[in-house]
Image (cartoon, rainbow, N blue to C red):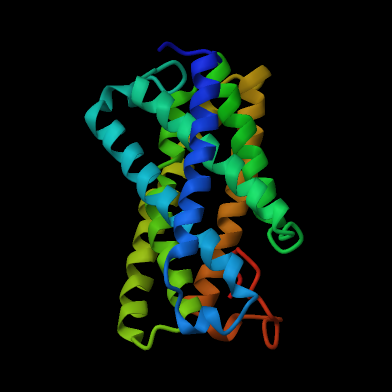
Amino acid sequence: MGPGWRAPSAALVAGSVAIFAGLRRVALALPRPAAVRSRPGRAWRWLNLLVSFAHSVLAGLWALFSLWHAPELLSDIQDGYSVSGHLLVCFSSGYFIHDTLDIIFNHQSRSSWEYLVHHAMAISAFVSLIITGRFLVAAMLLLLVEVSNIFLTIRMLLKMSNVPSPALYEANKYVNLVMYFAFRLAPQAYLTWYFLRHVEVQGQGAFLTANLLLLDAMILMYFSRLLRSDFFPSLRKGSAGRDVDGEKFLID
C-alpha cells in the first residue's frame, strides 16, 4: 500500500473508529473505583481516559518501535515512507475522530473544548499526510508523545480514583516529568526547528507549520499547568471550589 488517500486508507480509519468504540464498550464493563462510582460527573471522564490510555499505549509503542526498526526514516522527514507509519497515522486518526464524537455526543464540548481544537488540528494534518504521502515521518515523531501520555493518563486516573498510596502517585509524578521532556518536549522542539529551517512556508508546508506552532503553545501551556499542580501547588490560581469532574484536561 503506497502513499495517497485511497479506499483502503479510508477503511483503515473507519476501522480504527470502530475499534475504539468497541474498547469503550469494554471499559463500560470494567469495575470502577468507589471515588468514581460516588461521583456521577466522573463517569464519562473515567471511561474516556481509559480509552485514551489504550490509544497511548498502542500508538506510543507503535511509533517508538517503527522508528527504532527503521531509523533511516529520520533522514527524510518530508518524503520518507513506511507501511507501518502509514497504518499508525490511520489508526491514530480513527482515535481522534472517535474521541471527538465521544466528547460531542456526551455533551462535554464546553469543558473539553481544548481537546476539540487539538483533535481538529490532528485530524486535518493527518488526512493531509495520507493524501499527499509527505511528512509521514513527522507524524511518527509527533506520535511519540503518546509514550508521555501513558504516564500523564495514569496520573489523572490515580487522582480521580483517590488511590490511598501517595508513594505510587509520587513515583509516577517524576516518571511523568521525565517522559514529558523525552517524548513530548524534545520531539516537538526538534520538529519545530526542522520545519522553520527546512520546510517551505507554502501549501501543505505552511499549513503543517502553523499547526505545529499552535501545538507548541498548547504543549507549553499544559506543561506549566503540570508543574504548578504537581511541583508548585502554591502557584495555582482559581481552582478552589471548582468542580472539574467532567473536565478532561490537565487542570487539577
